[in-house]
Length: 528
Ligand code: XMP
Image 1 (spheres, rainbow, N blue to C red):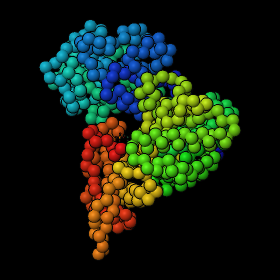
Image 2 (cartoon, rainbow, N blue to C red):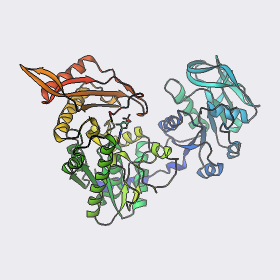
Image 3 (cartoon, protein in one colour):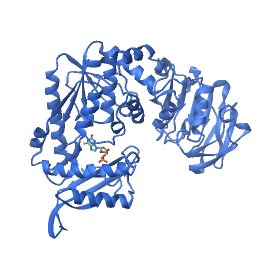
Image 4 (spheres, rainbow, N blue to C red):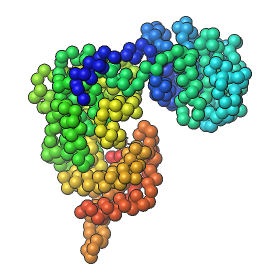
């Protein structure tokens, strides 16, 4: 890849992505982020803002359309977030989803009431009067996914009712002359087969949005932004081996080339060959990389410690110390790359601007007094978009799809005793076998995480003619969408059998393999 040609092309073709955007106003719905992601999947840039965002702020952003999300409140509850009627003055197309539709309908004089029974889950939808502008041409009967108790019984004056379901006399309505649309069902979930079609129709045909959002456009835009921010300054990036910091580094490298230096602190708590993979991948791109072999330092500080929170604290502090030492060796570095994602931005209140250092697990939580200006090229991206951008930037598949790995690494998977080199080596070897077999069974991407845990206890076994007294290894594999909840993965028995026999046969010091079959809650994913 030629540095100059890609950066030039990037700057020249950077689209004004944010001038063609849709704003999703969040009324607290469980799926609000998903609405924004789905809109982006339709090729249109979408951002999420709180439903309380002042209308003046929205006007300044000049969105092409607004989507009002669902929410947990009842429109009649005291304190329920109201429909901001001043939005109507903006005269832009607006789509209310679930609570968003109910709030709009109520504010405009329609009838919304609590129904005897709500509708939850798969529901049959029947079009009325041909389905109008929003639903016309779709099958007369279709299934959709609902989650509501309040129900629209009559649309506001002038609105046409477009569909009904067994529990919703008005499951969709519209007033095209004023660009107002509402649907009771959730178009963003996969259980609504025509959901994407409905969104696409609203975005393209009704709001006239162009398809300008793509991995290529993200790369071009972010490269241009970083160039503008950094000028001819020097930049440092802490690499963890995870997809976020890797993609952030690649984007910044496209923008500033050799003026980026990456620092990879190898704390000795990584998985097998992980450090080598990072060095090789970044070497391929010709990115200046400092690998700090800090295993001894970390192990010395962890000696005698078995309390989980102390381990985390020690590892975090040591990481900062090493990082600061390396940064001090580089001259004139003013900028620090952070792999902050859009979900972090939303969680921290959606503030704009790159002015705070967020506590970021994978770089050990850098303190606020580090004297750097932050460069955050992933601030507008969801995790799955980061992976798409990573693949587009030729990041090796193994790194693009890496399962989440905690910043304190294998240290928090050795439980109930001190972290030693011997135990780390056993755990690393067991983990490598598990990963190899899971990849061979093509299950790696379907699992949120899969790893081994080494409880510091010994049990009796028999191998050959001798009695053994050795560690167990626990296999932990979970499925999850966001790590907030997780289910233990039903791994095939033959896979478990292979993993168990390989771990016991190939690794000295292990004589037993167990499987963790707890979900989160009440367990957590990691053991500490
Ligand atoms: P738990 O164990 O709380 O984990 O269910 C949820 C997710 O967070 C990861 N995790 C960590 N990541 N530093 C990190 O960078 C940590 O100290 C840490 N603890 C847990 C865990 O791997 C899972 O994905």
